[in-house]
Image 1 (spheres, rainbow, N blue to C red):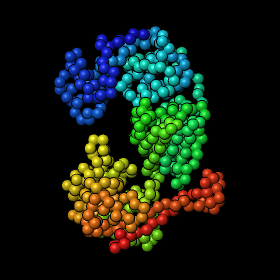
Image 2: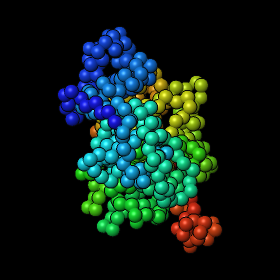
Image 3: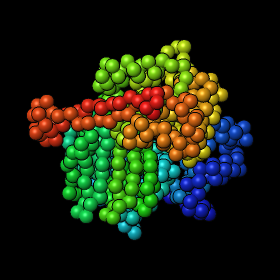
Image 4: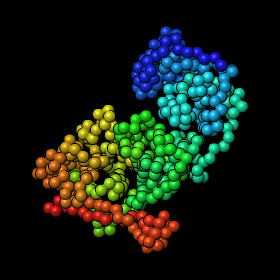
Length: 489
């Protein structure tokens, strides 16, 4: 085993600063005459968030064998130049299957100190490094190695086929980013697949004094999900955070993230939010399943008379139409149904959402990114210059957004949005509270639809609880809606 160590260690956080890393690597490759200025400029074109080494490989400018030693040197990591004499860490191989490690191009090496030295073909993959740190269960270090070297390590290792580990359930395996092995990973994978198959809207993970509790929200009612006593609360939370690309080490502050996976035969989005509590972190994963979205007024459960009234309002060329109701009451589904009906060749429709929950073909949908200054107000100011007929605003939550929505409705746009009020009649007062003059509200607000979802009794047991409804007595939900127009607003 031949290890090449960097001549001078780089600063420890260098690899976490993509711009700094790219600059240092470019300088090193220029000095070594591997790449010229034109080739570097070609790599630097486009996204600045992508590491330079990944761009170079994707463009085929250098082979991995040439590039990786320089990448490791800039990161301050050693480089494994040869697999000869390398010894595997059999204890880690016994816990993590070779299929998982091969899929990640990672191999655990034994060291004299007892720590694990993980050889990685992409040592800059921070989410993978965080995950391996948790799964290894001991001190861990990292070293760069080419993919061919790692394949040789598996081929030379007598422990290449570790013993079988216990798994839970028999759901179909997910594709990236859930196609891993290991007890924690497999448990979370099966749990998310079960949630999708059950039609859950959310998964609730809660750390408790005894461990952790998992529940699904199905038809508005929380149902318990089996836990594994052998798994710690911290490792399950860490797995969910790794999937959502969150900071695994940060447990004191709330975090928000997202990931996409193929589960139960379809692609599903998960929006993840963490919250620190007394016994650990509370994590909620909101499930956005396109196949679970049922558009159409009949699918919403609106009465025929109400449907005709809403259609009449949507037929107007301009004005502000609001949908109100508590969280999870189906406001977004109602607005998407409205867009589905309005989405014709003769109309240009633009949305600004946080987040974009479902893709609507033919509609220009904009995702708010507050961290870079792309908030509702900034997007809306730009939208008005794109001459839309219809604008959907995910939620009116501040004065800036409210004022631009009112102005858009005044100048001939039909504006659809949601607003948090307890009743439809409270919408006008809420807009005034946000700083919009009352006379402007009266000028553009054409209607407010208030709605909520109430549990529907299970038809099999009449609400008493049975196997068909999971003992909850509930099977689906029914909508309660009220439309307020004119002077009643």
